[in-house]
Image (cartoon, rainbow, N blue to C red):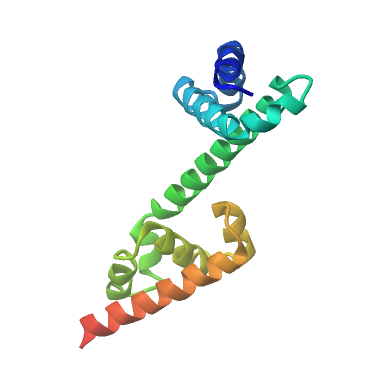
Length: 158
C-alpha cells in the first residue's frame, strides 16, 4: 500500500476508531493515544494490507489489542498503587521500623512485590497476575529486592 492510499484509509478509519477506543477505554485522552498507537502499528503493517479485501479488519484487530493492552496497564498500575498505599502502621507490627525504612527505599515495583509476598502473604502467581508479569519476573524482582533490603539494613545497622 502506498503512502497516499494509507493516508486515505487512515482518514476513513480515524473517526470510527476514536469512538471504538473511547467505548473500550472510557476516556477521550486514552482513546486518542490508543488510536495513534494503533495507526503507527498499522503503518508498519501497511505492506501486507493489500492482501486483505477489507484493510479495516486487521486495523480493527490492532486497535482492539492496543486498547486491551492499555486496560491491562491501567489495572496493573492501579493494583500496584493500591498495594503501596497501605499504611505503614499496618506493617509496623510485622516488621521493625528500620527494616520498613529499608523497604521504602526500593523502586516502586520491587517495593510492591516484596510487600505483597512477605507482608500480605500472596503467592508468586497471584502477584504475577496482579502486575501483569510472569512468575519468573516476580521471583527475580523479589530476589533483587531482598538483596537490596539486606544490604541497606546491614549498612545502616553497623
